[in-house]
Image 1 (cartoon, rainbow, N blue to C red):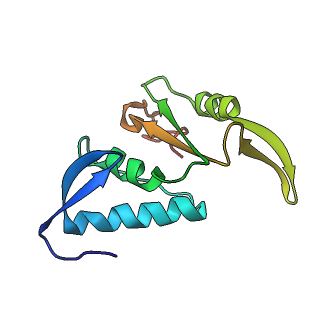
Image 2: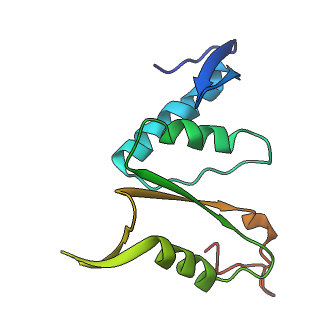
Length: 130
């Protein structure tokens, strides 16, 4: 169920009782569906807006899922993220070529934190984010 009114709704996520504006519940249900289907998604927002709560809810109940956090700083390079993926995954052959598959679970979600800290180049671009 997706709520559209602006009243507060009480939810229990991972044993924590929280109150959410019912309009925020849409994000919870969409994220859970995306995780269940294995769809890639990007969750962006300011610090403290509830991104981690949405991820916790989306992952709750999925026992074959591993949640991994990758922290960025101003020196983070694309190769750093690739190293993190290689630590968490194995390279496997598939019909269309080689793919990375999670080592310890059937699904892997990598939460990339502090992307805004990565230093941009002289063209104001960032290859790690691109």
